[in-house]
Image (cartoon, rainbow, N blue to C red; front, side, top):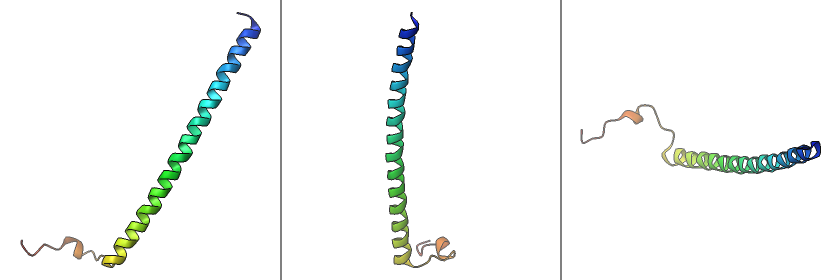
Length: 68
């Protein structure tokens, strides 16, 4: 195998690796956007729940229902 063909083969491999790395980077970026959106949604839902019930006291978390 000649020196030129080895260099060409390495250039092809580098090009493929660069493309794969960019694709993985894009996927990671989209996943982080989804995670951020889900976290924001979860915080909004928690705020709505806390606003609807008022602040939960530690005693109310362990109350025994009346049928016991």
